[in-house]
Amino acid sequence: MEHLVIEGGRRLEGKVAIDGAKNAALPACVASLLTDEPLILHHIPDLRDVTTVLATVSSLGKRVIPRGETVEIARERPLVEKPEARYVEQMRASFLVLGPLLARLGRAIVPLPGGCTIGRRPVDFHLQGLQAMGARVEEATDAVSLRAEKIRGAEIELPYPSVGATEHLIMTAALAEGETRIKNPAREPEVMDLIELLRKMGAEIEVETHAIRVAGKDRLRGAEHTIIPDRLEAGTYLLAGAITGGDVAVHRVVPEHLRAFLDVLREAGLSFSAGDDWVRLSGASRPGPVRVVTAPYPGFPTDLQPPLVAALSLGRGESRIDEKVFDRRFDYVPSLNRMGARIEIRGDTLEIRGVAALTGTTVAAPDIRAGAALVLAGLAARGRTTVYQMEKIERGYSAMDEKLRVLGGQVERSA
Image 1 (tube, one colour):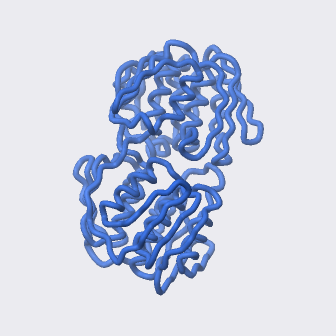
Image 2: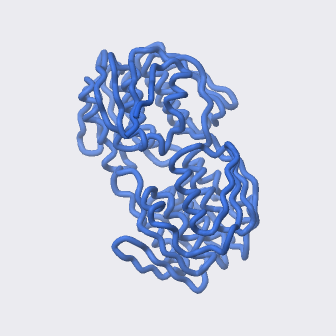
Image 3: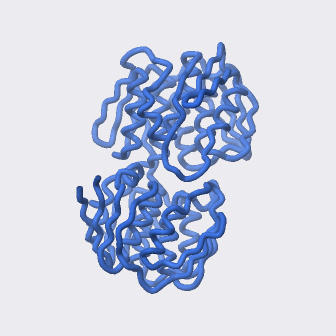
């Protein structure tokens, strides 16, 4: 089992290029199922989750041709109705193939998805929306089967602005008969990036103030598209600079996508500057106390909550984080406390009392973002920190050890 060995206490300096957004790349790859024509995607990150979703569409009949940061997905054979369970069980995003298969074939069978264990992430919203569009759903203990003679447009109101459900229903609606209106949709940059791709493929999609309207088409065409930068990776490396009192710049980013995150850094008294495609943070001082509530975009992203908590554990005063998106997202806190942090869990709230120093120890990554938080803590801690279960971190961060070394971190990968 691979792990990272970190010798802490080094100030990070320099700049790092940000990869394409994982959470935009995954639905973009699934969108290839909506057409028989080639889809060419640029700025695709080299991540375990992307490899898994590409294997999923390949198992369904697609030919995948990777060329560095570019992937071409084309038709190899007729689509089949059921992906291989070993892929879907690894990652929740693979469940998104259900609607496109249903729209193309009139039937689909998909095993229930896996992914990070960060609380309840029900697929009910997905299934309810597909049912409204005419799908007949049969649920077994380990799979979902859908059939429909014809997918038809519908009026759908999501109980919560779920990113996955919004993406799933938009893709399905693009090939439905008639018009679909999705109320209370997610508005994350990754959702907007998928909409831009689908428009290039010929979809007719209108983003309204409180809804997304999709006029279904008989068929979609191939397209070429560049994935947006990963705002979550960018935020993580900026926090790596903050926690080490360093000077770190991220480039190949969209600063507007980081607005809520940067507002919190400003409130914490950290200095940063930004240009058209870069942000630079000079963390000369420890972050001050903040009160943060995670929320759907444009609110503070839940995926940057664990790295932020790591930085605040070495901050000044008392901070409070209210986690309102996922439950069970605090599994990393006991490890931080073993390193010397003073963090109390009160329901869905964290109370963080900043300490002067952390001490390295051996920890394990519970999930992608929690693992990143533990790596950040190790960068600032006294002595050595060993982070196990790197395979979880690598679902969301490509070559993290290499990028941290570029910034001056003493980080080594070990088997």
